[in-house]
Image (cartoon, rainbow, N blue to C red):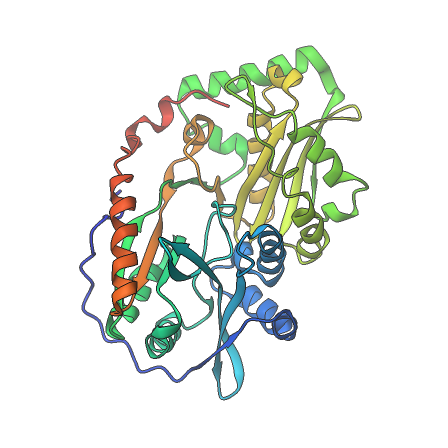
Length: 402
């Protein structure tokens, strides 16, 4: 599989129709709340639904980062695309200003700051070609208001990246596409776990059976798995998950907690996303003790494994493998066709994955001197740090199991 190039990509010759959409910018909380119903409608109807581009996700994270923004200049910057007054598309961005050597620089980007989520889409809507063109035209007409558009972790599915790049260049804007730092390993769900494990190597099957026997021998039938379709109805579940994650380790050292760090964000999202069917939780329990959990997102036919943690004292029960097998059976029973580990190429992911989804970073600038100078400095910095070699895909099955 070819990864993205750090150089300007050659665009396919294609004809992009003229856009019929108008673009409006909203930046206040009041305006955004009026958009909630349309945003939820578009998110639900999207060809490739993405929990990370829902209204609830955007607003919860924006409020979190706005509280910690040292400049106090972080603003909502959501572009609304309309067709005869009807909302047909949304570009969920933010606007911020930074000062470099006394020069004020203005950036448009997604609400995430340090890759807190894994897939970004520039537009929530059903007509990417025309909507990308309308947004590009708007950005070009208002190029005096911004210096750089920096879009990280854009999903490459469906030709979205090339469509965005083509639209920007057609409207006279400069555009560079870089590969994301990490790929997203996944495997298709083609049957029950029992059926799928039979397609793996003899050593993989033997290792998994041995872990099952070890579980049965040490804890018998005291170990149980529950998959909660409405986790917000489970009393104190999120609190228990935060407590379990707090003792998570990596290479023998305590890891920085994520749920705990952003507890307020997830408390605000918990009921909203759960009630709308976006998330579920797989629980592994020993009697009443939580052994492990896996926070899953449900994006139509795709299961996304967002976060996993387990009790370090019970690591000998191989909770990670159990969670993956149970999630696979759940997915097959409910019509899901893929399990996506999301970003990161950790060994346990590569052990089970069969392929990767790619993402891109898209940089857009205009012909103003400050915009060109700022983009040149950033590009030079990114390209100098983009020399990390990729793991060979032929080694996927040689990794140690989780």
